[in-house]
Amino acid sequence: MMDNSPVSALKAQIDAAHRILLTSHIRPDGDAVGSLLGLGLALQDIGKEVNLVLEDGVPVIFRHLPGSEEIYKKPIGVYDLTIALDCSDISRVGNVLDEHGQADINIDHHPTNTYFGRLNFVDTKAVATAEIIVDLMSAFDIPLTKNIAASLLTGIIMDSLGFRTSNMTPKALRTAATLHETGVDLPGLYHKVLLQHSYEAIRYWGKGLSNIEREGRLIWTTLSLEDRREIGYPGRDDADLVNVLSSVEDIDICVILVEQSDGTVKVSWRAQPGFDVSGVAMQFDGGGHKPAAGATIPGHLDHVTRDVLEATRKLL
Ligand code: AMP
Ligand code: MN
Ligand code: MN
Image (cartoon, rainbow, N blue to C red):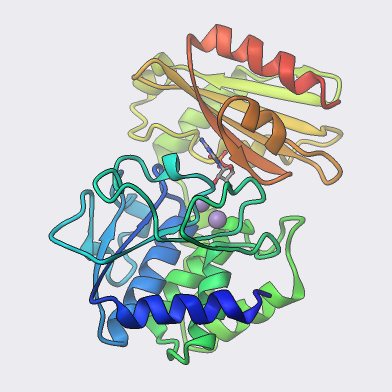
């Protein structure tokens, strides 16, 4: 739980603001979109004008969320307060805050957070930034509507992989229950964001699964641009294949490396409890949590794979 003084300071800043810019990270996940929409709709409900911005736009699987059509890729008009959500450092927002120069408020749950905001609400015990938004709404007496709850529950479900990550807490479950009580379709949200995959995504998994390599308790795989092109997979991500890798028995750490068209490689690490992959991600200018971290690394797929494996082996 956060102590009260920053909460009152945030309340004062929000009260004084007229138009608030809210943003979250590039390659937005359910917590990025969910926290943004949840807090955005809550601020609208108390009479604020908001500008919701995600540099990479809203992924298709979240476009059913009410308000998602009001998320833009660039800031519009003027604003007098900026809030970054679910970002461990300022570079995670992309170029959204370039004109403003900084984030006024930083609300996040990553242990690798750099405290880049003028005001920082970093609760590393929260399973998702969305959980912190529920706490803040309760502190500000803003009612939870069904639409707000759908977004925030999406954030909690997705970051906790359906209430099963090692950082799950009774409090997060209670928060999810409170959100569920508004009448949102929990099984439907769960199915949409965690279980359902496109036919192309599953065929793309096939490529990644056939490239799997193992060295003791470490496994990894790569997905090249060629793999993506052959299958016609439309995303730039791993289609959540990392969650399949992390289900393999007798493995402590798994890594997936996805080649990007801009000459970088998107790397995701997942680890069993007792391991901390956030440090190795930080060595490559990334970040995350002990059991789940990521980085975007410039270089050729083979070279990045070699360097990442070399650094990762040191953890085992
Ligand atoms: P991913 O592997 O992208 O699913 O991310 C796993 C965790 O690491 C999430 O908590 C992300 O927010 C975080 N993460 C991923 N990429 C980065 C990055 N480039 N910088 C900081 N944190 C990251
Ligand atoms: Mn996120
Ligand atoms: Mn998150």
